Image (tube, rainbow, N blue to C red):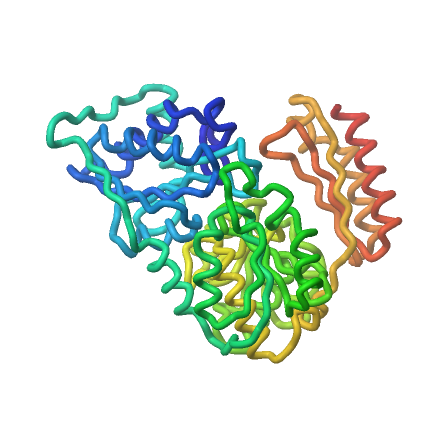
Length: 448
């Protein structure tokens, strides 16, 4: 992870950590790195509904214009809209201002190449080196060479038309609840799902700048569960603040997470002959039940490190077309270059309608193993020593042997905090809870 850019862009408390000055400098450096051979580069900018997004948009646009880049302002759109439109409009790069599922005081800057894919590490590192180390000075344009700002009035319609093109079933009369997290999908969901003929019940779709992700959206499903049950809906969808994630709720008010969404869609794609290499890509944190489901249905499974960027890298390298995370970040590579919550909702609806099964019936096909996660605070020296600690390794091996293939142990270092994460899965919750606590106690004794 870089010094400014984490696994999903640059993030921080807006106007404190992520300041207008920093946003302006990111714009200047990004334009310098991404468009070295282009005298008049073109950038587009999208944003979510946070109060601070306007401020950062203005600063970012100013930075881009100062080095001669022209800027197209998209307004409030989902992150995947930026990824789609930067390629459709043939721009050099696109920027999304959002902190995803985080509270309103946070914000972030996420950059896409003209191909629609997020920046690779090496390009982010070059941008960081200009900003933090001053390895080069971005050009200063004057007169007619200063960039211009224009405003799009087609971005939302063009993005929605793209999602609508993925429709594969008749949805007329279907009643569905939508939680827009008071975020980006507030600008698109009603128009999109109404056009599909769905009878929608919408909640958390009145953003005021500070209520984004506030007890709503994919990280707070309680309101959506109640909405589904109170309104007799067939199912419900919850998006996060920038609408690149989606979690579902079935007709009984039960959560359907990213693992199950990927499982349901991958199986359907295999049956339709569209699952490339009969493979799905997930992270090591996916539930063991997902791996068992794939095994039972003739689907190969690739595991990556935690983070959707690693899932995407694997998919691109090996020519797979579905992958994602338990958190609801699902990539349908035939249709999008990044996770897209509203696209995921449509793809799941396609399966439901064409299979003539309820979401609860489809979700029940994957057994979820009980999962226990214990975080242990360790010293910096402890983080370094973990990889070679034979005592901890022996303890983990003993627990794995006892589980005898009916569970697993995953112990990993956090990439952002001084923590060791101890995760166990198995059929007996009491057994894995006790084992997780035993391992955690040993880690604390030796590495804290």
